[in-house]
Length: 473
Image 1 (cartoon, rainbow, N blue to C red):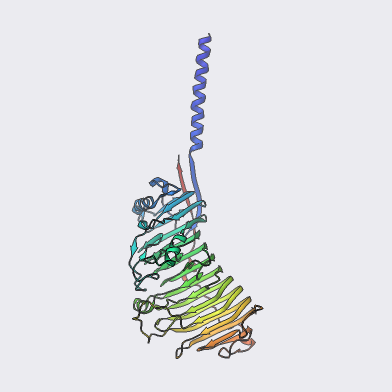
Image 2: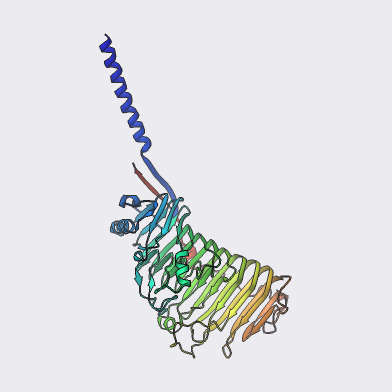
């Protein structure tokens, strides 16, 4: 009898143990499932951990990213693919994307840019620049790079990309770099691009650089770098068409948004303008640079830029146009409205003597055309100087229109709030009183400086609700 009871108890214990292990196994099974908005959804999914990724902040994941994207590229013509980066600290060097592809960062995922120089391939200078920005030779590939692609999405649930830029800034200041510092994200010769819902920290140089591309959405991006960090521009659309930048917050050591199109004779020869650009709901803090800069590399031309609902805090200038003799090209049909500024050095700044050149071979007869610059419905306080507007002798900046603008000067403001040379235009309802080269046309002109009512094509893009689901033990 006693033996029979013992056997029953043992059997029950075995059953209980098996049941417990099964329950534990089910608990250990993790399901990543979520939805997100994107211009296109994907049929195939993978996680970086499927390819040996280790999120410990110490192990290099450059090969894991490369292997994952190489594998997923086979699906570019079969519904596309998405690569999920889970929570963790993922150290990596530069890696390249593929077409019909989404890179998605979990909210607790951090990409850490490697400080091993061997993990940064060197590329040729951009053809519209002729040389690197930091050095005459080539440039390091960006952390996330892509060329000749279509339908690329870099997004997340506010995941983080940390460029660990102090390493690069120190070497730059010491003159130890042979090549131009890398950017965090650069997409070139591509179309249909979405960069959204991410936090970018401490870029070695520029943060987001779409170049020679079209149909671009940059949305919901937070960019933070020390205000003294060198050349940490926020978002730089460069020789791009049909671009929208909206709902971004930028603290930077350089311009929050810098619109570009090539440098001197190289930009003139390449001849690819930036046009059809919309900037909305941008907040900028940059004590030594501009909220929006147009140039100085504008030799391929900049036209049809529309910016509205902007906030600048403790920033050097609101809108700045930078150019010089030898640039050629043009900046025309620029429209900015509904801008609020607090603690500024200048509200408006136009510079015709921005002196840096790619080399000594620029054409001194290549004069830029600056025309059709429209600013309206703005308010600013604690401003040192309302405007510094300096055209080029024999090549004045024309058709400048400023209306319904109130600028409150700081207690220690300059005695002359406006300085103007070689410019032509008009104002209406502007305080303090502008310079004589911008005569007030009376209150009936206060609605001048028209903002185009029609939308550009990128405004018509519809987002889809996409999903990701992957279970693993």
